[in-house]
Image 1 (cartoon, helix red, strand yellow):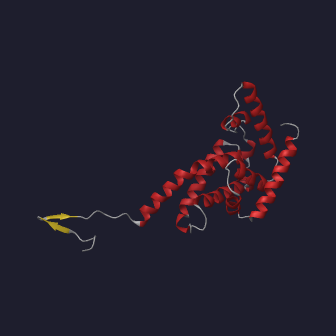
Image 2 (tube, one colour):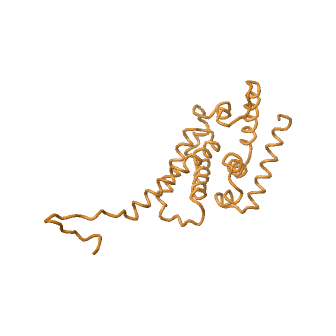
Image 3 (cartoon, rainbow, N blue to C red):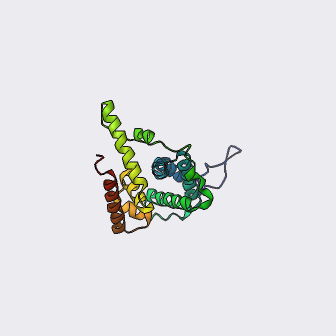
Amino acid sequence: MRASTKLMAAGTVIEPMAAQTAEEISAQEFARIVESHRPQIFRFLLASTRDIDLAETLTQECFLKAHRNWSRFRGDSTAMTWLMRIAINLQKDHWRNRRMQFWRQTRSNAVDVDEASEWLPSGERTAEQQLLAREQVGHVWKAVKGLSERQRTVFLLRYVEEQELGDIARATGLSEGTVKAHLSRALAKVRAELGGKR
């Protein structure tokens, strides 16, 4: 007997329990993806833009775009890699878009270096050691800000998001060798910028 057939029992019509549609299952699956990967996408965009409001906006745009295209996700990579690629492209589009230039000039909501350093775990115990750690983080942020867009993206994915080189390559659309080259150049520039400030 088919599930859609109504059953008669003692003169009462009994409807069988409706099975979930593929669309409902897909929506639930996407909701789980959002729940598990949203913090990483937001953290990457915050580290890239250093603006909480902008990072939140781009994170929402990332998941909106992913939701619209969820049916086209083929599973060639992990969902995280696919989402990170969308986030990277949104970040690039943001900086290229002349209509959004005011975000660069508006720093009233920008993340303060001292505040950002408090988010990073530090094993230091004394106030002096914590102050030195904050100074070091400030110098690193300043050095990272001077990197090219690709170098900064690769650097942040590797050292903030702790992604493997293969995942970074898939997320950025670069070859693994190119990722290594950009990462090497970024590290050299950061180390040169830090110089004796260790």
